[in-house]
Length: 447
Image (cartoon, rainbow, N blue to C red; front, top):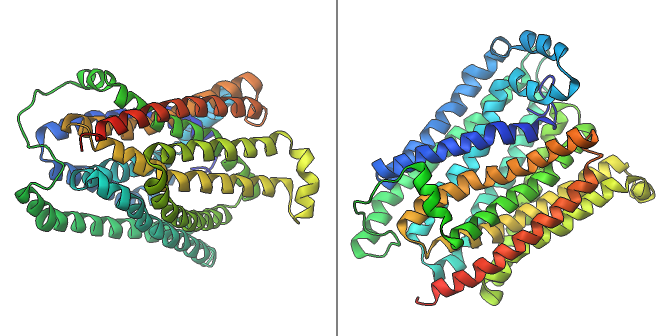
């Protein structure tokens, strides 16, 4: 989407606000209905399979016909009559199928990883086991991240060597989505095996954390939201997730705009992101090993404060580099690079350190916090927080960026304000984490 015709990194704040957030709210309503009407294991299948069908259809049908499906002529006519500031929203309309792919790819992480995987883990894992094994669960995901990054890089190289006239992106998409569908098949088969051979035995012996299934009053979406927000525990969890989404978006959009300037060719952009994914997987593996010691020696609250500290410090460093770019020109020359590439590399380091601390500490902390909750809060609370909270945070960050762009003229001119807002959000994140830490420790005392 970033390298599509008439598009760029400036579309990200708009798509997160006007596409991702409504899609997340809609999914949460559907998920609540599914939880009321299906067994939990069937909810898993009902959520995963449509994603895999869409990714397959995108590679085989939608992308090859995107020239016909995308309304370039219509958008060109509309763009000629509107101010330049409407370029980003019009780029979403122009490349609507790419925008749809972006939305569902973003939701895949929220739905399958945050909601379904961790929800399943919370049902079959005790708090003591979680402290030992939750950081390790993420290690497998990050081993996959290393290999997937190199796979993307390999596909980029292969795409660069195709014969003239061949649609390189169409070929690459088939390889990439083929890997996604294959992984999805393994995911479904593994889940089915665990339901049949592990969960069934645990339920028979009463070892799961799942409350006995009973008839309960079905609540509307509005009633569910009111029920969830009446709990300060749930509110603090929501603030943590929203704050992360907002902070990472405030920095990431500025960083991706720098990447596009440094790597305007889609092939080079894709190769850089492949190396970035592998580097993030490697760093996160190390952070996972450190994370186990942090939980065991310092406890939940300290572990929960590492991520806002990391994002706050590295994010402010990235913004300072952008604000005082000329001051750092001698440093860039000494390192044999340009100020632009230095900003790209510092932004990459910021993203890697922030996300590795999230995967190794923030996510396990968040998932442990669900364990003491009742079944209603675990299912609907988790859906509301994980599926809506993260897009809501990113949309909040995107809305701030949109307002600042209209107010000061550009993302670069808004950088000082973004740095100040980042510091303010981190402050409220700290407060919520401290409060939730006290509540979590009190909730776990009976055990």
